[in-house]
Amino acid sequence: MIGTLLALAGGLAAHEQRVDALASDVANLSTPGYRPRRFALVDMGASVAGHDLGPSGAPLSLVAADNPLAVAVVGHGYLQARLADGRLALTRLGDLRPDAGGALTVDGARVEPPVVLPPGISSTDVRIAADGTVTAAGRKVGALVVVDVPSPTGLLAVGEGWYVPTSASGAPAPARHARLRQGVVEASGTDLTQAMTGLAEALRSLQLAARGIRVQDELWEIANGLRR
Amino acid sequence: MLEAAGQRQEAPTVAVGSLRHPAHHHVAGPEGAAEPSGAEEEGEGSRLNLSRGWTTTWAPHRRPARNRPMERGLHIAASGMLAEEARQSLLASDLANATTPAYKPERAALHAFGALLAVERGRGTLIGELGLGVSLAFRGLDLSQGPLRETGDPLDVALEGQGFLVVDTPAGRRYLRGGRLTVDVQGRLATPSGHPLLDDQGRALVVGGEGFSLAADGTVSVDGRPVGRLAVVSLEAPVREGEGLYRGQPGARPDSTSVRQGWLEGSSVDTARTMVDALASLRAFEALQRVIRAIDESLGRAINGVQA
Image (cartoon, rainbow over all chains, first blue to last red; front, side, top):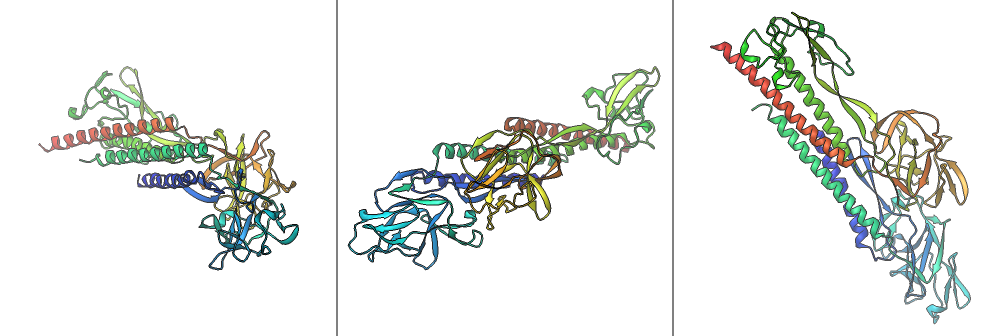
């Protein structure tokens, strides 16, 4: 009986985790480039457990960007940049802007390897090809590298759409299944209908597990009543 | 006198040790009386307490040296309580996994241990069967297809039709009904816990990332080139091991099973029925508790009566 109670309590915890993941999806309904969390429920014999498998790899829809330098990674891959603390980080948010020295940055972090625009060039004169080649006023100035890791599940999310490769994700290598598109950004991947039905399902599952706990409790009470 | 001509009809599970061979059991009752009433105050002239409707309740026997029928009644009711408790733990597992992708509930049914056939000794009139208790018998998994829903996630895989995917674990080959998969650090298609899926040659499927496609026949292609075909096997006597994995005897690839990428199979648990079963089982548990208390009271009165 105690085992069954614990199993149901484990179920409560797993469904709560799922509600959290879905709440994050709903909260990021209009965050550009947000990828819904992949949450897997797996049975654990008598109980259930939740696995957070990281961001989903499903393709996101593209929307026009205000920034002429913005690029979207189409397919499986990431732009890499050097964070202020020296770590190499990956992102799919291609909101590129030149810093004071003309180097292309994402959110203040210089892309790696660096691409430096010549002085005095206007953002509208910069072309970024599908393979990453950057030309300014018709002259090649560098190339953006799109990388991918073997296991995106293992990436460590460090916030603001940045991911740091870990031993669980594997080292970044040039992506085989990705290209760049200039002038667009990815919209949020949250499908509100899916998120809300998922949320309703998770809440009902929580209720069901809670109800199961009450039944177990009553069962125990009856067993205790055997001897007055 | 009444006599119970013991006939054990069927004992599908282990019998409780305290139950003797039914042939040695005799039920005493008043001469020719087929509708006895409360037995406990009658001392030696005991009878079946059929008036309460509990065929599992036994009256004291005329030859106490060979039988302890009151105690047997306790054991029978207790076996019922234990069976209901086991059923509750199964139902709780179903409730917890009501939304787990590809979860298959376990089927179980209450089974009678066997029965005694009570016959009136004087005229040979048949009184009927008397139960000896109950146990929970497992009947395997309910492998019916769960509902399929589209997720659009390339790493979600569902099977439509019978069969299981093959997974390599440190404990040997295990079988998976589908669900949310991942790609491990070596680029292999794997379960959430990191166990690689195998192709029909028994090799891990190296997809190198999420950019792969999966055809309905299980063929995995990377960059349009096939790299292998997911093994799908039928499974004899599957046993749930947790983490969505099963063990059992693998068989041939089922004919009409298709593999769906970007889909998930829902849980096969019928929540309404599971909840109703849980409540029915709870009330049965409660009723059996009352039976035990009633027998306990009867025993108490018998003991105190002797004291006088």
